[in-house]
Length: 174
Image (cartoon, rainbow, N blue to C red):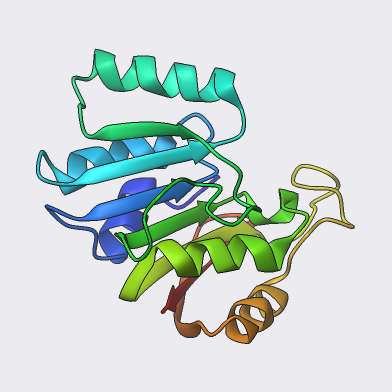
């Protein structure tokens, strides 16, 4: 279980008017919270490769009258695969997604491309396999590995933070 997503969003200093990308948005747990947090003058780009999940998220946003979520069918491992403009977002959330990415450097380069200078990446992933409760043991990306990959791609670790049972969180800055 995650630490409260609300607390994570608050900790990461997301506020009114920001543009935020949710890379690997899945069912939109974070996208929906972020949309409320950034308000009518902000926008959340919910990006995923699973069209059915994006459809569910779009319907959920409509139900809650959140008109500031843009669902995007996109490839996180391809240059410009998110379709976002260069240096256009203040925050990128990458939650429980990185272990599934084959070309991790390409994903980080796409994050770097869309993130404004001084923008932050909120990175959360599984801390272990936990007998396959989480990802397969060969797919787990441990915190030190994540730090190394991001630092090789010119990000700086700002802080680690608790992300709940079985997870870790790292805040990176561009």
